[in-house]
Image (cartoon, chains in turn red, brown):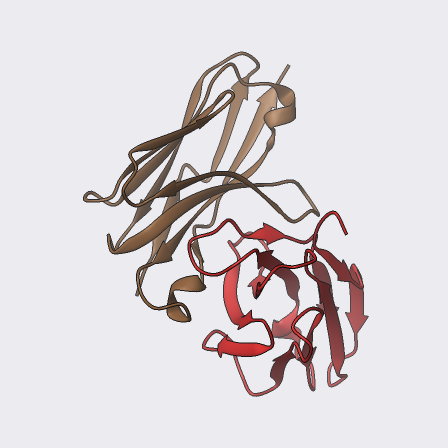
Length: 114
Length: 116
């Protein structure tokens, strides 16, 4: 595809529900990143994949957050037992190779937990 | 821990004015610095990327400078237009190995409005 795509674009969940957010990176991009953006704030790093390997997950806020990229392309960010503080925009980005390159961002998934 | 600050938080200017957005960071050990634009409800669009060895980058009406030793970057927008209205974010990438050097640390952004 032409750019990074994410689905769904909007998600409303009841507290305690599990959610799964999908990211389709630019074809051929090796690196994939997830960020969380709270209202009025800049994005904050969650996790990073190089191909299928999760090289950095230091930004995941709790063990309720889990990300995978099993075939080195599409990635899924899963949040278990959602809490109200999980409400945010979740951004996915990809870059062609590794560190030092421009990251291309998707439109984000806006998650609202009631 | 790297902290990135952007001043001002919001800015309103009349069309045609030149303007400067500021970004400061606490740890000068950076690999590069990137400026992004974010429109409401949209993702981030990369505007300019400055490597740590560079002093500035230009693209059209945009010019970004980097003073790594003082921990500062500026984004200069010439002859502003209403279409420039958006939130502008700067982000720094740290030095380090492939894993740790990949995450960007963002500022909170400057919300720009260019009026007719």
